[in-house]
Length: 96
Image 1 (cartoon, one colour):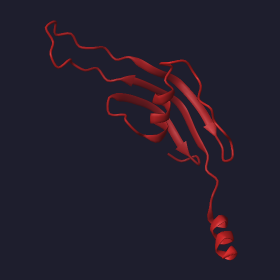
Image 2 (cartoon, rainbow, N blue to C red):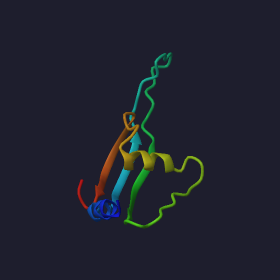
Image 3 (cartoon, one colour):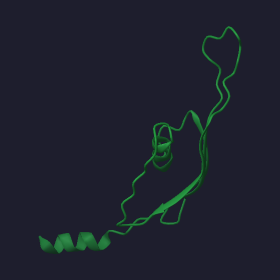
Image 4 (cartoon, rainbow, N blue to C red):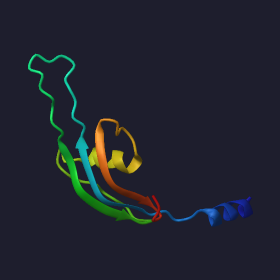
């Protein structure tokens, strides 16, 4: 039993995550019902955010309400991005 555990741990590679110049804006959209026919303008959520986390490190993302913490996590995990325009690079072990 211990041999299989030791072999399994030998296969595990360390993982690093880095992101560079992340820029996120909301996509412009038309309201469903509009009497004034205005189109909502895009809103900048994140501007030029960069960072890196190496294996074994702990990362804390801190900021006030509305600062973009959840948006950054969504970009790093590629989730819930349909209403946003995302520019920048997210790399896992140095690869896109």
